[in-house]
Length: 461
Image 1 (cartoon, helix red, strand yellow):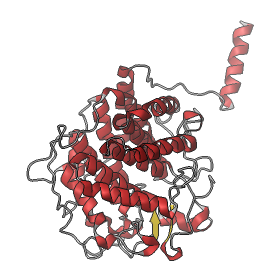
Image 2 (cartoon, helix red, strand yellow):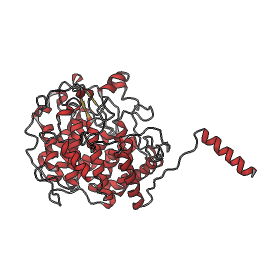
Image 3 (cartoon, one colour):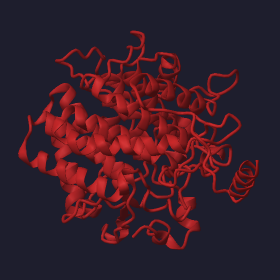
Image 4 (cartoon, helix red, strand yellow):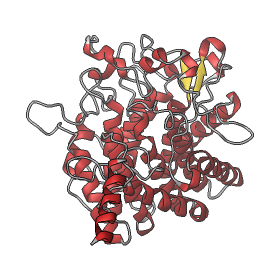
């Protein structure tokens, strides 16, 4: 009895000190366990979505600030994550939600430039929706009704608006700006994610359509990013961006996982499209090595520029999931990467589920995976990260993304996106006060409030 009491007292003291780790309800020990875990994480993620309720706007998450935490782009990323969930698990539960959202938010010209997001619309925001449309084509997601734009056509529309000469100027010798309307905060910034999404989309369209025009743009975009120094020529670290008034020489060397991840997936598509060209094999290999080295210490996803300092914005809290998804897809179209990538993603996913012990249901996921302990903060990004990490464990059981010649059925339109003004300045209705809250993926609010325009993103350097 004395031994039992002593043990009980010790356990109470440890618990009161916050040293006991809650046991996760989740397992990834088998394919069935992975599917069960992914289904639960997906369900909890969608409790943040109200667009299917009466009076709500279809396809978007609550926001933008101050109306809610989320900018328009993150919903587009969420639907893409759910498409990958469907691909990997076979669960069709959310396909109708995905269909309605992706079509509703396409905008009046079917190019993902809806007028209600004018002053939170960057090239990267539009790019994320375009990449989700591209994913729908690649996965043979159910095609929309014949009177609706096809997934391929929507992806082509985004690409064509971004390839429009009005989006490209001579500052910094080329490259897309972060923001689309010139009145937006951040219009003077050319960054890696805007150009990375454009590169990614071009590479994937090239592979899907076998049209060299898309590949030429992808090559041009890569060359510009490498030439301006956003892709470090020595170690392939990918930096955030720079300002046009400085001729893009004032490079902000903050590193975010989705910047390198979006390039990695695009490079894998270029490798596949070029039938294993040596230069793309080399570039992809260096990106894989850099991504794992920087963002997977001890093989667990970690957001180097903000995680340790608790400075991650709502946007940044979702980056780990995209990186998992994009790396996993690379293994399907550039199989030589599998040996390096898949073990890392498996270790990272195991760490991810261990900390999903929060909330009233005891299974909400936090952001800090390496600690193994729920960090007390939940949201769409945290759930989406874990959903992506867990679902991607089943990538080996799936076929490669299709092309038009290998079973793709999506309706395309090579002229899509030509209806509107590529510069966007006269593309939409007058801006409302509510619109002015937004400013893209990494917001101007953050830029203005942290110690200078560069300091806020340099914590990890």
